[in-house]
Length: 436
Image 1 (cartoon, one colour):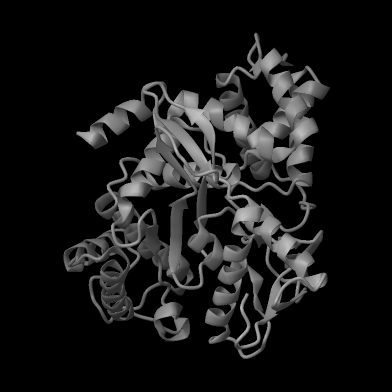
Image 2 (image 1 turned 90 degrees about the vertical axis):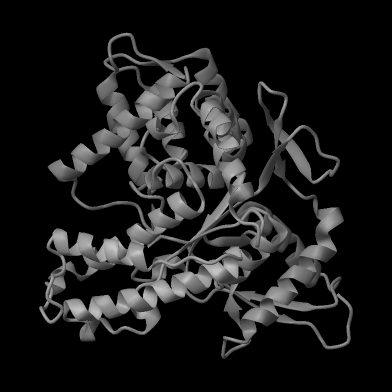
């Protein structure tokens, strides 16, 4: 009954599934900015595409590491125009722009002008929070998602875990995987690991053998694997096959274990929009989980007594969405304890005193239920206290390699700005016997 009410509430204005297929809220800003500068659709499109490249916005949830300098092919142009139209349609739905002749002539509404001015005066964070209200008015998606997250896991409250194990992570060397039998063996070990994860992280048991057989039959039916185990598969399709495994089990967990009523693409879009707004955290790089974890940084309730929560939205039934924004003065000691504990936990797997700062961030964010931005703020404050000699620990922050110095194409982990500089490795000295 409660799930039915949730779905009715989330689809009262528009179905969650109908949200446009783009992740970055920056797209909405660059469209509004382009409409402010130009009135003709073609000029707006050209401005939008230029800013898209300058802001390094991709079609996925990851930004590109450098500004896109590749030649624009016809195929790329078609994808860019598709994205433009998706953003245009959603912004129109929110009443931020008007186009009486199907985007040949476009202008900002008064609300759109106010939102653009808000970005200029208060920055992206304030802009995104205002966008949240437009999105929630129309879709109610965040209420549905946050409520699902709250009920997803009795063992680790609020945490939704979507496991993913590549053959390599289960000690299968790609060079040695040549036949259908190799993938059958991998699938058997994979479901053993998934069943262990369900027991460990969810506190329940599941037998996945039937589902595994269904997956293998799908792979055989589509010609990716053979019905004869000794037959070789096409090595060029290795990545396609492993992606089918990943997608199948993530969809299974989302649908069957967490009872999420919509598709994986819609889940991803709303999750990463929520991350940009600061009401949800999502990561595929937590050091203690193989796969994706998602958890809320907000609650939906009538009222709260803690000063660490700010009201962001009120629903028609009187419930309100409060986002967790702990203040520094009340949480300084707790934060320092958290980074020290996380550091020494991670040190067990590192051969040097310096460890990955992004890994430490993930542990602390989960423990304290804080956003990436709050972690950056608290880490900067902690580091300045360290430099002033006001902590009973010593912290050293350095740069190993910046993302741009690697061969990666996409920025899959947000860099961490501490005291106005990017840092990615950290060492902590907490002398035994001293209190933090």
